[in-house]
Image (cartoon, rainbow, N blue to C red):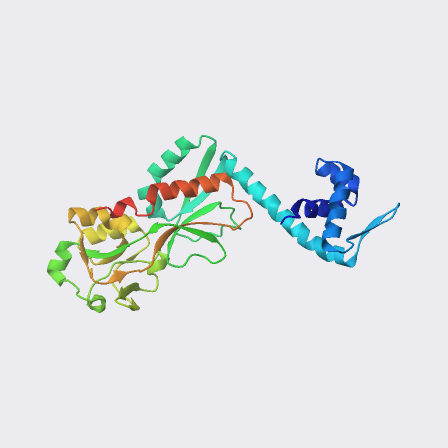
Length: 303
């Protein structure tokens, strides 16, 4: 990279098709640009440009060499733009989507502190359990709770998401406590078909073995709030993230079962966004704020 200034001068001459225009673009003199290109040719031992009094053209070697110089120039420009973006103040409308119950339980205080910190940012939140198409629907960021982030998106892991299988003490007194995941086949399981992680069954890891239990029950709901109320009323067993059931486990209104089995292993909270060359300051600021607020060990598991 000791020839970087000469390489950039050469690339600019090719782009502008003129030593004078290249000098103006580089804010230097025509004579210096000419010397840099000549010095580069001498160092390489080849002629890159054919120059006459009327026109200038690339040699075959010059054309091949220019492609590499142009690529380096683009990367330098991208690096400089990234610094500018990082220094810029977050502003504009941040279009955000999040699962309904997570948004309801945990986003209000985070949004309040974020909007207080960044006075020039507005937030448009769509609380939905539907997996939105971020590109087609124009979303800047999606909060996703999954063990498999979408491969076409950039996903930053914010925090782990732990799950608990639990039931009201009244249900367990009446129907008994399951000792293994297989025992769930003999129980009423309250299932939530609105959460992708639960649609095909309840997934467990016991030791090194992972498997999915095809649980059944007489009640299937697409509302987390309704399902929790049914569980609290002793109507069956639920599997839910601790960010939902944590308070009930702490006060004893729900009791964890199958504690030797890891439910929905490897699930995490992710901030996902569309891959672009430059991350907008408002997106970067919100991701950093998410991590400050929830990561790396979320507050709902501190008990």
